[in-house]
Length: 179
Image (tube, rainbow, N blue to C red):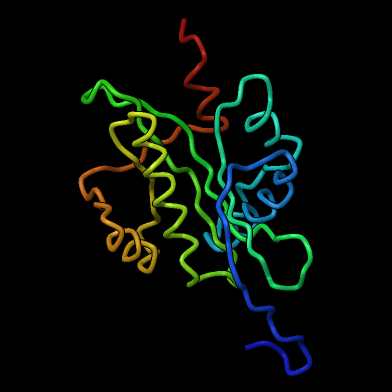
């Protein structure tokens, strides 16, 4: 509950989805920080605008992002309220590329407005437009509300699959020549 002296939240009158632009890097980084806090993973956070920018907008981008802008009805510029960051993966079984959603985040003040659903639908449409064979993402096993939301959207939570990761010192050790 907001403090009694806090201004009332500005009602959202509309939102639109669009590909992220260079000007969106700072808001995306801010939302990545919020997501890390929610997931209790801030100890892993290393993102900065300077580190993210070349991967989205450099000479050889390796990821893309879609943002949702909201019109708060104040006559000012729209506010970035959500983002989805994704990249192309590949299925050897299908012999087709796929779309992998790394993160989808909607700021708390803008939840339950259909923004998350709209982002998922837009990315599914993008995967279809590009001729991709599937659309994948991961979800934390304790995030029951997200799992339920994704299942309502038609996703199957893959019970037999586990994510494997090698990072940091373990990645360096694995890369070392054993000879």
